[in-house]
Length: 163
Figure 1: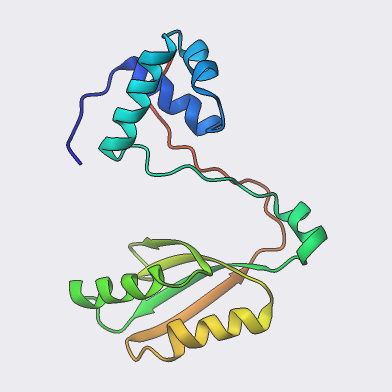
Figure 2: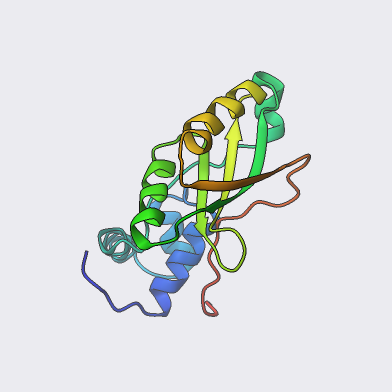
């Protein structure tokens, strides 16, 4: 992926797609005041450059719960015994393979990692902790906080002022 120059129109496109990635190309072009072909070309360039990583659907946990049960959401702090780059990267690779881990942040100061974990139920969460933490001799400490209510969720990155 090559680096690209982005201008105000690109920023406006990115801003609109962060708000609603389901917009048709024509609707997006109308919102950012460009032609549909220009908009399509710009979005393709933004995707090809890696600025747009992927498009996803954000599910409403309360509505999903009505059909599947509430599940568990946990914010988990993990501290490792060894913090050399190889140990940190090995833990990150292990976490990336675990479907229950939705987000992983390397942080400082404090623990080495903060994870956002979604599990079906407590036995599912426990099995995940066995795979990720208990079986890893380099994991020194794990502290979990269980969510009782999601009051805000966002994935939008703040961008410089757009039109």
